[in-house]
Length: 394
Image (cartoon, rainbow, N blue to C red; front, top):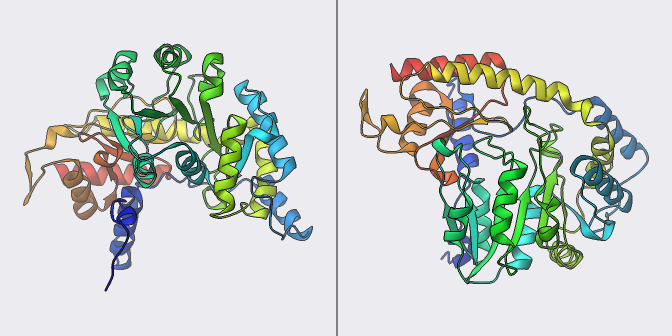
């Protein structure tokens, strides 16, 4: 007899991982699936980072690491925050974790109580709401649309706040939309939050270096909210290090200590070799990874042009990350071949099973009208995938 906890039964399966698993299942049947569902750069980890890892192996870095990260890595993280984000953190405010996802989970677990509300400007990364659920909090979605470039307004933020609001999660550049909040836009939202001293801000900046001209602005730079803001970052996306699993936070010291305590009972310290490699990654000039950003820019231009040629696709121009989030609601209620498309999930499943292209439904990101397409894939695969989509819809 299987009796699972309410905690796990209430937890949804990650939509991105579920789609990737379904795509793998079809691939195993011999079907040529083009995967545009995962947010994973198709580049190899840069050589200078791999060499640092090899040196760490040869230098026998093989013992348990400190729970909150090696002291010299935390110092490098502080230097990075100062250099790239104009933020001042001390090593005591830094916690290194097994990926930015664990960083976010730590923060939610140490701040949220049952019944607390978490504001999620939509579209939001799929795991935000799941992690909030795991912390027994309630997600409150603040909607946006392609007309607003997938960004919320101060008026919407004000209307969503209740006496139970404890945390808001911002993500810029955004997954899944690629939208970037400007300094002025963040400051306008901050003016609302300044009136609610009991609300904390989690600023997920994992895509900061993948932007196409809009300067990245860290929310914690707003002095009045610095003491209530937790800055989350990591090396997965910009450094093509998804499998290395290193994320980190800069936070008020009391929150960092609590995250350290939480992590000490869950995973302890992050992988020792990956930490040594991360020192090389984030201490290097950002220019060393510019070649990847330039390639993403080229791919963005290609995929936007091709998608705009498909009737019924409405596409904005994302300023960062490596996703497009087209509105495909034109197809809702329509019959394509033998299928009737009721919603974005139907549409994404149609593309997988008929066009052999894996995407992700926007419903998983809090927007029912869109699908997420990752262009962290080769130009050849992007062109072939969009051609397949066009042909399947024709």
